Image (tube, rainbow, N blue to C red):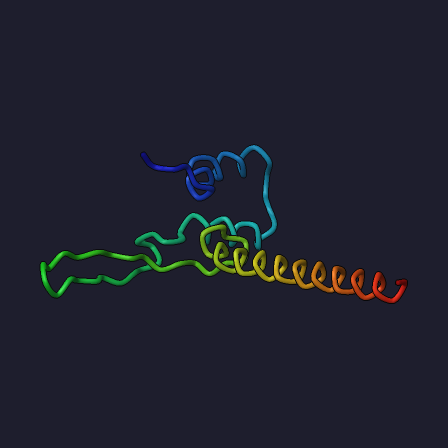
Length: 106
């Protein structure tokens, strides 16, 4: 079972969208093209071969575009983890402050 990706949607309908809506800013074209080409033969890739069995696997290069969901998934996950860490620190600080204030009142 394959999953539908944004690149698939762009490949299926971007040209007809442009024909219907008219010209877009150049950076929109560049972004759409980068997303459609991401991890495809168009951007090249690397072939990895198992030393034992000789099985080969080709991994295609990423586009690196900041709008690409494939390329930015790691950065997004790291950003989320950093925000969770900040929230946990704030919660710990808040709990420590509450304990301090409770001790001071008694």
